[in-house]
Length: 254
Ligand SMILES: [Zn+2]
Image 1: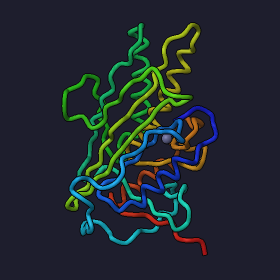
Image 2: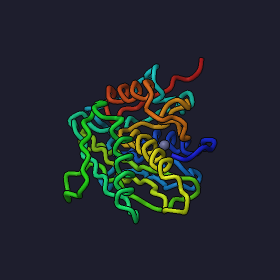
Image 3: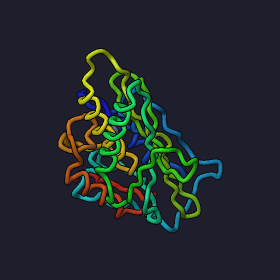
């Protein structure tokens, strides 16, 4: 997510291009920032080569659901691969460590703000379990802190979907938030509020959502909305009714 700038279209083109891959893995990088030079997603098949047939998944492209914004960034005729957590995943453990900060109580407040943002997606449909200390394994998403991002970038997420032997494997490779360094007179409350909103937006990506085309949705690429909207939740519900790895197509205009 970035603050208050016109959305760059390059990411949407990237998503479209990736959707056209027929290889065994699909990577999505929502850097929410310098999208012209953003992290290049992995491309192409895994070393185990492309999967020519995936019997567990519909071979035919499915029509885009009409209500939400899953396909709002597609052009007619384009397709999009459904990338989300598989059905057997019911719970996500999300590690949220303390951000580095000279004031421990402010560090805790920043973390609390992020947790509130993440939990905006609680039970929609996945159960989110927030973990503060690294248990070593058994963590599905690791929030990473950085004190610097290029330009006005404030958060970024990278995900991958692998399809192998009919099994979908979805992973969040990167979930990074900007915790800005302390400066004289920096508005702590505003920073925490932005962290909360950014965490909510990035968690939407981690669940599999792309960007919305309306400012009232939390998944709009600019920081405009304070909370996920009914349309955000509806779009996520649509996503989780579609088989991971299936393709959505926006019918060509008549
Ligand atoms: Zn985004």
